[in-house]
Image 1 (cartoon, one colour):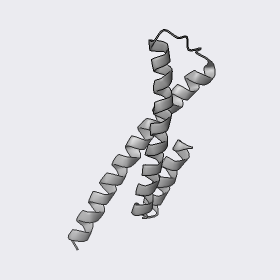
Image 2 (cartoon, rainbow, N blue to C red; image 1 turned 45 degrees about the vertical axis):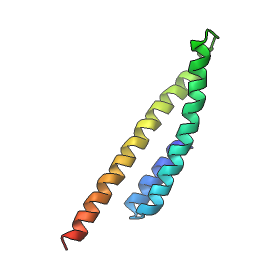
Image 3 (cartoon, helix red, strand yellow; image 1 turned 90 degrees about the horizontal axis):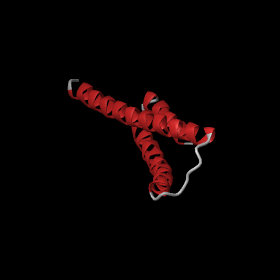
Image 4 (spheres, rainbow, N blue to C red; image 1 turned 90 degrees about the vertical axis):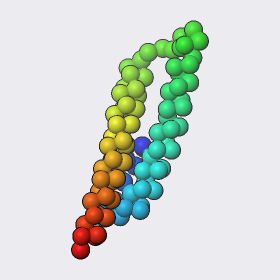
Length: 93
């Protein structure tokens, strides 16, 4: 869900819908924050001595979490660069 929202934002940037892209990125950031909170609960659980079973599903979820986090950061940065270049181009006209 987070990943698809990030890529929807990227598609919106490509379509020159910057404001809508920003809203999508905010939505994705909120979802990712919720996921990180759940992840932190597992970390706290294990840090307090409680056992957290490590399954292939958990390992996969960790991998996806880190990948999506990086993708979101990259798309946010791309949007910043796009906005700056668009602003500079309009100033130079």
